[in-house]
Image 1 (cartoon, rainbow, N blue to C red):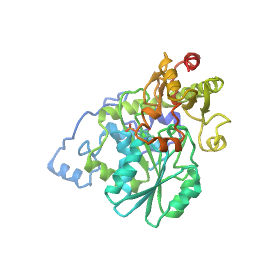
Image 2 (cartoon, rainbow, N blue to C red):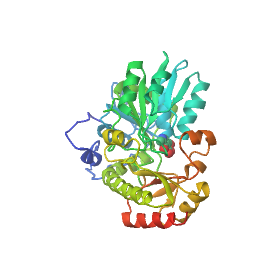
Image 3 (spheres, rainbow, N blue to C red):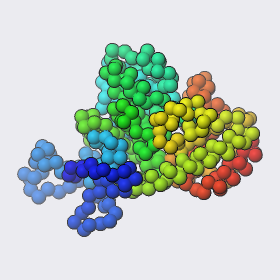
Image 4 (spheres, rainbow, N blue to C red):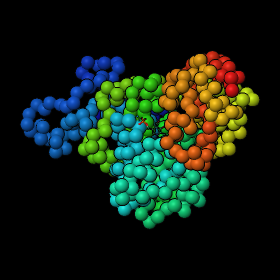
Length: 395
Ligand SMILES: Cc1ncc(COP(=O)(O)O)c(C=O)c1O
């Protein structure tokens, strides 16, 4: 798809224009190339495509023009040399790890991870001879102590799900670099607009595009980003094992990116209003929002992130029963485990997303029975605040 022209555009402009390639019809909105493959004008042309002399498309499991536009837009936005899109966020996480590790290697990961990431690191990789150590991601000494001569990758997510702890990406990146390991950051709880892990020293970024990038709850998707050599490895894994993004979903995500900046700005402002309203209510015994001065890592969040977060976590009195009463009393904010959506959504992590963890592990991660996780949408802030305050009265 031609050379990427790195113009001096700001992110909000890149989100709308970067990567667009128009057909001979000059369409305004990018086309969906809903095709499994491509035809060649001659057998010689087919041979040249397959042996790489002609860099055109050969099969949509390998690459597709619509998906490529999405990848180009993501790479430009993130400041990465290249990107590959995947069928889901988990396919992106798995692809990043599979492209990096081999039997005999070791991975160090922050223990506050999304459950399926923990499954890959703790259960799946050991079946193929890759060992792992889980650390408290906020404790830099634990990262240092966990390093072994065969440590190949560091993996972390920040802000963490659901307790919104902030891990110092630049500091962990330094430890990774001095240990010869690559740092992978799952940037799902943030967005490329709010946190730029590559600039902080990370090597690889992964996204569940299902979240803020789609932002309207329609499709699953994922992205891996990094330098050209790593993306070449990731692409080899993807094209031969098959978790590639469908052209239709690629198009939905490409269009999702166009509105990302306005959505995230509004969601962040709504999250800040909601966090203050919750913190002011006596039914909330703890409110966690990285943009509030009472967040234990407020200074780090200010340094590392641009504009706090679209997510708020809070603990209500009365444990599980109290949390259930609040969630069920909401009339506008819906109970759902997605996040980053235009619609405000709430979930009770202990009985949904983090149910798989033992009560002891949940306690260690600060996931109490009274904890609720709220993803702020783009609705009117007054309506959202009225809904949460009325529900808190029920606790
Ligand atoms: C932090 C994090 N990483 C990865 C994923 C996986 O994304 P997907 O559901 O698109 O596979 C999720 C999904 O909730 C997530 O929250």
